[in-house]
Structures are given as structure tokens and as C-alpha cells.
Length: 154
Image 1 (tube, rainbow, N blue to C red):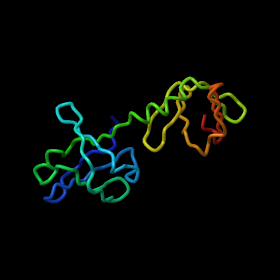
Image 2 (image 1 turned 90 degrees about the horizontal axis):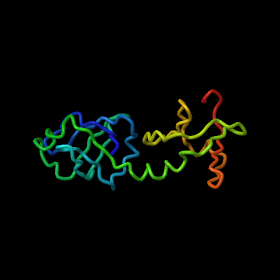
Image 3 (image 1 turned 90 degrees about the vertical axis):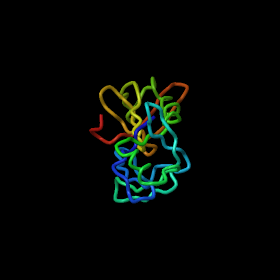
Image 4 (image 1 turned 180 degrees about the vertical axis):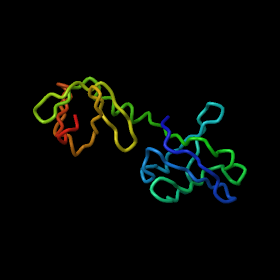
């Protein structure tokens, strides 16, 4: 589970909530997939019925089964989580590969930092954005990833 927002306060009397998004772009939230809120240490799924952006990092959200002010107030202060398991399996395929910056070896990919909308490769102490515009080629047999990185990134 990956935290993407925090419920800041209730909004109105119909169960709407105001959420502040910390790492995820509001436009990247898939309203067809459930979001989760923890209760007693267990993630409980909710579907987003409506999502209205309020600026760059906040949104008014109406969740299924949150029908009144009392329900919304119970959620205040909790985090909204998304299921990030699919990203883990796809992105971790590069761990152990050798990264090349153009023709020069840059190092071995030791891990991934799965920042929503901006996954990064861990090369030593550096984070390299895994952006398709930077990828020149990938050879799964040799486990080599060639990228054209901006000067000074590594």
C-alpha cells in the first residue's frame, strides 16, 4: 500500500472530504480502482464516486458509503492509500541490470524508488528517473539498460 493523500477535513454535510495529495498528481488517481483507508490496522477499500480538484494538491472527494458529516469526520486525519503491488512487479525487473549513460557504464541498478508518476532507479546513492524519453535501449538477455541522461544527474 502506498499513501497518496491525507484527509484534511470534512466538507459539507453529505459526506464529502477535503484531501491533500502529497506525492501523487490528482489527475493520476484512477477512480475505477479502489482506494484504501486503514481502520484498526487493516486497509478498507472505498471507491471514489466523485473527485473535484481544488488547486494543484487538494481535492474534494466523495467516497462510497460515506454518506453524512459524521461518517466524513471519522475519516479526518487518516491517509488514503492505493494498492501499488502491480508497480512493484513490473518495475523491479531492472534490479541487477547494468545502467549505461550513453556509452559509459554508470553502475548496477540496486533498487527502485516507486514515486507515483516518477519511478526512479537506484544507482549507488543517486536516483535516476525511469522515463521512457531517456531510455535509448534495453537488452533483457544481457541485462543492460542504456539511457541518455542529462549532464550532472549522476
